[in-house]
Image (cartoon, rainbow, N blue to C red; front, top):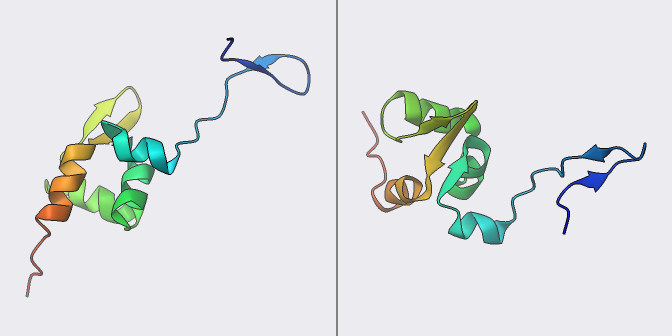
Length: 83
């Protein structure tokens, strides 16, 4: 089956990347937006955690991705509040 779809002008276009909740539960790596949704926090929080070295990430092409195992580890070992 051809993965490219014809647009309104009859030209082929790439399908949009929509990630379902089912896919997120088995994805090995997630983009920042997906990780934020997965953890229930904002994108800014994810970027802060990355810059602080708390959440490891990889840069693949132009995209920053987070391994699902690292996001899960953060859930199992939450940050301690600083006073």
